[in-house]
Image (cartoon, rainbow, N blue to C red; front, side):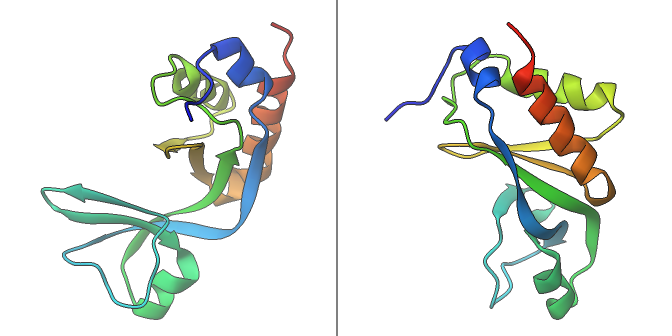
Length: 131
């Protein structure tokens, strides 16, 4: 099943929702036992994990970027053009940093934890704009 490709339709149906919790980034040499990270990126320098902050604290991992995770419930096609740029542009206009992770069905945006409500409101406003 392929996702939506039309940018106007994607933006109209973003349906952003904040997932509960605090997410962090950690860089490790090997996957620690006892965790289920939200995302893993393999880089030359090690594994970048995006994981629940409480799990990282429990394992004593050095972390960076306390974040909130916002999932865009629209099923976006991986080939869709412009969605990430539109989201980044809207959040940048509010001085909110954004780290986007594309899953097979949805895009996920990590924003500073202390700006989570602002980011969610910004994305809801973006979705409500007339096209």
